[in-house]
Image (cartoon, rainbow, N blue to C red; front, side, top):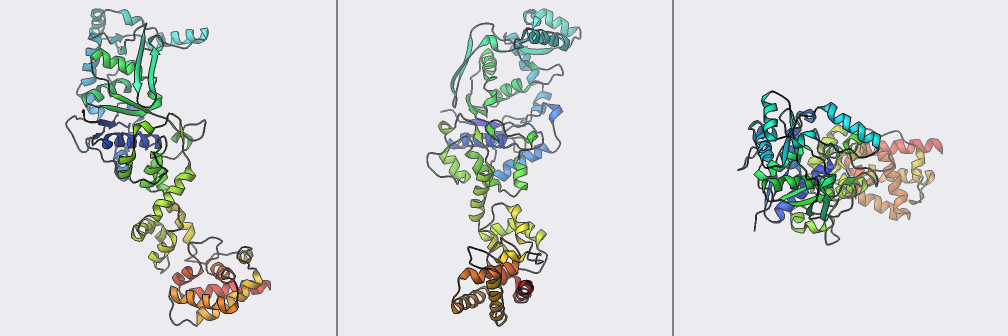
Length: 486
């Protein structure tokens, strides 16, 4: 059986689109499912769209996600170079374009932009779809070569049969057949000598022995033309796996141009790479079970092309946020603390035990960027409205809260040792002694020590971290606020 070889071939254009990353993941899984080879190839022949630093961004993203490539520009391999501009410099695309012309699969074209524009205007005037009718198609090879020798500029266009059909089988969308008459004769080699994407990736895929081509379904319409090139050369055609689009909603594709998040944006917003990867695995693929949380190793075992959907997948940030929270809670405290530390140091400048703060944060955080706002009260008690002391569910109001804070202050001030256990026992004993509900004591204390409606951790945990002196000072502030109203 032929060893599976897939390739991720991004253009270095500045960021990693979520759809691109999902393609990389599926290509990785298709290869690794059968102990195959996953290749990284940089397609940088579209010079106008190149963004400096983007190649490093591609390497970093794949590394952060654990998608280790077996061959590529940075790790080498037997089929290099793995950078298209370097391959172009060797002359292979021009060489294969000329060979394709000799085989009858392409022709030289000397038409100007004006010639093409004229035909386009005529088509628009008639209300028909534009398809360029190239007069150079019937030029003899001898005449074309003479014109090139005379210094005329040219492009290489594909030859498309005027009649008949071209078909292919896709692993997701099944058998697809199109009339050759609707296919346009695309440019394969531009006048500056650069290959178009459509031509270069065919040559590279063949030369690198790619067995499975995984890409977005926007390339379904171009695939018949790719096959005509393969057939003209007499090459084996790879298996095609076209993926459904990732959508923002039912009508709009996810797009960076529309302000939608890239992988880098999501990481900057506090999402973990592993959670992002897990979530996008489920955008267009469904496992056989109800399981939703997968490690990369588990995905390798569970993934199958047969369960890739034909339907578009809608990116749901709320679902990703939920999944990210699950990943955070599955970390060890030490792992979480290391991730939380930059946020804690940014928001908490006082002399507090940051590990203890991490301990109360971890069960309650969904994204890392939530941390700063959740812990800003440790340094300084924010100004707050005493209306917070009234809480229907906790069965407390200003009068009950004032009485509870006075009682709590007395027992907390008397503690000889300030530990979480001591704070817990003293307050719980007080609650039992007074015959009140837990919330009637703990809600007022939590409000007094934090000044916030929502906090990581409860009254006891927060008081322990704040220390005895600061806890009592804040309770005194709460008593004063409530006393003023009374």
